[in-house]
Amino acid sequence: MKFAERLLSLAKEKGALLYGDFQLSSGVKSNYYFDGRLLTLEPEGAYLIAKCFIPAITESGAEAIAGPTLGADPIVASVAAISHMEGLSIPGLIVRKETKGHGGKRLIEGPLKKGMKVAVVDDTCTTGASLFHAVKEVEKEGCEVVKVLSVMDRMAGGSDECVRRGYDFYSILVADEAGNVKISG
Image (cartoon, rainbow, N blue to C red; front, side, top):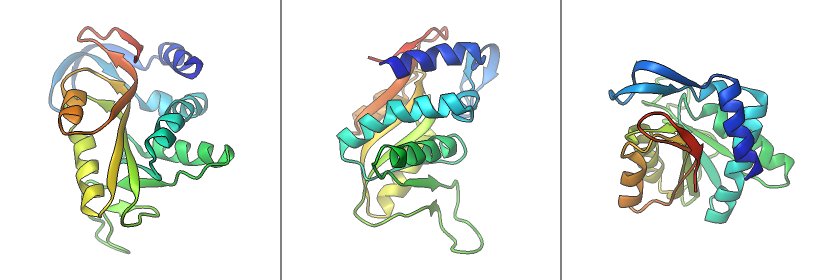
C-alpha cells in the first residue's frame, strides 16, 4: 500500500489532477481531468505504478501485460522493465487503434503468443471503451484476459461494465464525480 500512497501524493505534487471544464476521450464532459501521463512518463511515477500492478498481475496468473496505445504504452513498458529487475518476466504488448499499414501489419505489437493469459491496462477508466478495444483484440488472438487494470478509475461505469462482463478489475486510484481521489480498496 505504501506505493499507492506515494503515487497519490505524487499525483498531487505533479498536478496530474486538473479542475475545470473538460471533454474526455469517451466524449463525456467532466469538471476534472486526470492527466495520467504526468505520472506514467515520470520516473518515480512509472516505478510506483509498476510496483502497484506487478502483484495483481502475478496473482492473476497473467503471462503478459497489454494495453491500448497511447495511454498504456509507458505503463506496459515500466511493468515489463521492473518485472525483469525483480526476477520475473512480464512481457509487454501494445494494442493499436488499427492495423499497421506496413511492416508486419500487426494490430498488437510485442511477443504475443496464442493461448497466453494477459492483463489489460490503461491509465484511466471512464466508460472502459479503450480497455474493451484492447480486451477484444487480445481475445481475437486466442488469448485469455485474466485481469483488467487502470491507474485511475473515474467510477463512471467502465469498471462496473468490466465486472459485469466477467473480468477481474483493479485500479490503484479511484475518483468520485467531484474529482476527489483516494486509494482503491
